[in-house]
Amino acid sequence: MEQEEKVLNPQESLRVIRETIDLAKRGVGESGFQFLLWGWLVVAASLAEYYMLVHGYGVRAHLAWILMPVVGVPASMIYEWRRGRKQKERNTVREWYGYLWLGFGISLILALVTSILRQAPPVPMVLILAGFATFLSGILIRFRPLVFGGIVLWAGAALCIAVAVREHSLVEAGAIVLGYLVPGYLLNQKARKNHV
Image (cartoon, rainbow, N blue to C red):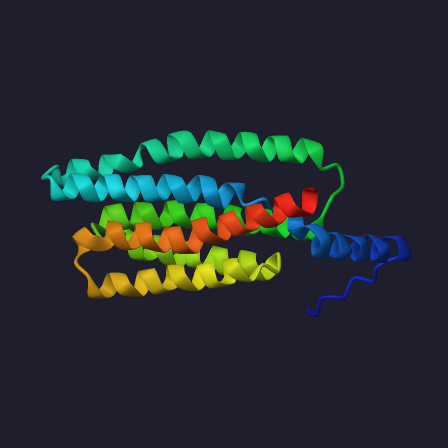
């Protein structure tokens, strides 16, 4: 059965045009906060895990990751709740952007559970998923550094093939610095400049 194409009435057409113009002006209202928050949390956890692995903590080294969601999830939720209160208008592109990262979160949880149950290193899969979401974010909000950030994260996943599992944490930290933090700071700088 063929789907019928939805015909927009004049008011809906104007709304879509206005949203597109708003997106071009402000870029979905993205300040880079989430990239900076999660970037620093992942870098800290990766480096802590590597340190603990090198100093003989064994499996306990993975405990370095526990603090990340404990800090990151509430901080992200509070930030998004506050941002949502400030933005009264509905924006389709902003909604797609939110769904993209919701899909990433669900995929990440499933990938981590699968890695743990299969006793497989999770870092390559995490970098692949993060690369995909970052790459698409860059395309969606038309911010080229995020597109390149996604490519860097994919390159980090590929590099994991060539290095020992013990080194995956270092690869992840480096990929996140270049793929999340650098674009996050550039996005933050752009947002500050647009608000001045």
